[in-house]
Amino acid sequence: SQSGCKLPKLSGNVIVLGAGDTAFDCATSALRCGADRVYVAFRKGIQGMRAVPEEVELAVEEKCEFLPFMQVKSVSVHEDTGRVRMVEFARTEQDLDGNWTVDEEQTAAVKADHIISAFGSTLTDAAMIDALGGVELDRWGLPKTDDQSQQTSMEGVWCAGDLAGVAQTTVEATNDGKVAAWDIHRHLQNQAG
Image (cartoon, rainbow, N blue to C red; front, side, top):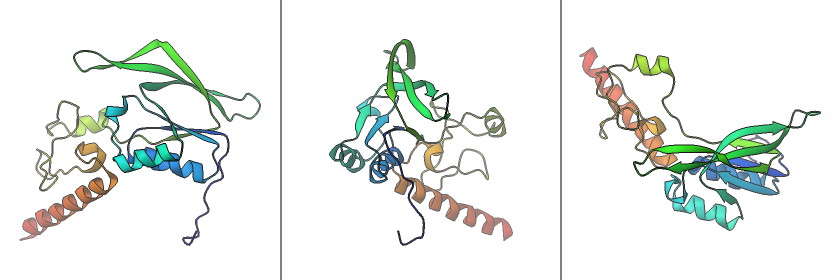
């Protein structure tokens, strides 16, 4: 490549965890890096995928296989090498109220040589949630933001990208960051007088 970066060499089975643009980009890139077979595993169904249709179509064309309604239960490694050997999944289901559960009795295992985690960001760290105590959260536990500024309900706090829960693509998330940066700049200029 012209950047001087060398692509990793992959072989065998690759499992990509996630269902957004990054996950599908990782899946097709894994094939270009030598993977024999790529599985894209995600917790929700096909309708729950966050990737743009073009990314999904490319993965289908390149023969990536989808494993919907699956959550990692365990990873087995080779005793002698410590390398990944297999991933065991448990089935996820959505109840009539919209809540997601994991059914540990329904499992499937897939042989794997590599695992790529491509999940979006979530707000789960207790210290971070406590620090954002004054920020209003939506029903998914993500900060509510103003779409014109990316500012949260707390003065002087902005949020963008996956964590803001609005952007559907990497390009949109990047633009949200730009919007937030511009509004932070405006805010600091106003404070400086």
